[in-house]
Image 1: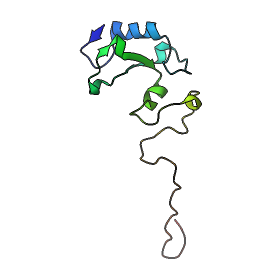
Image 2 (image 1 turned 135 degrees about the vertical axis):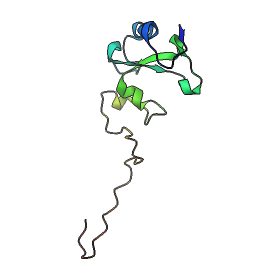
Image 3 (image 1 turned 180 degrees about the vertical axis):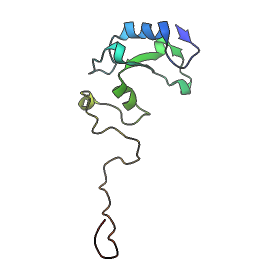
Image 4 (image 1 turned 90 degrees about the horizontal axis):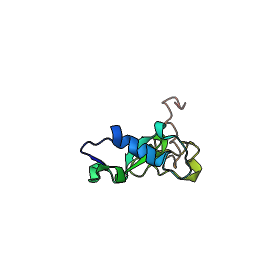
Amino acid sequence: MTSPDRFFKGLLRRAVQIRDRVCSHPTCDVDAERCQVDHIVEHCDGGETHIDNGRLLCSCHNQQRPGRGKKPDADQADGDDADRDDGDGDDGDEPEPEPEPDDDGAAG
């Protein structure tokens, strides 16, 4: 089953849901009805919208897959988003800079 569209819709989407049943992340069991169908080979990289190139991912694991921030690991499978890349360019590894003092010497 192949579609010329970018998105998995209709019977193609349903076929992936029936096949996978839950999120394809190894430690996740989010039900198919609550998952997104993701391209294994990205559509922008030439990946077809085809049943063999689709997999179910819950929204959390879809957003954390390679190319969209940090890759999820077993510690994040419980939905803990503490290490999730929020896109602000700050990886959280460096401390925030101290505020510059005002002319009167008070910070802030």
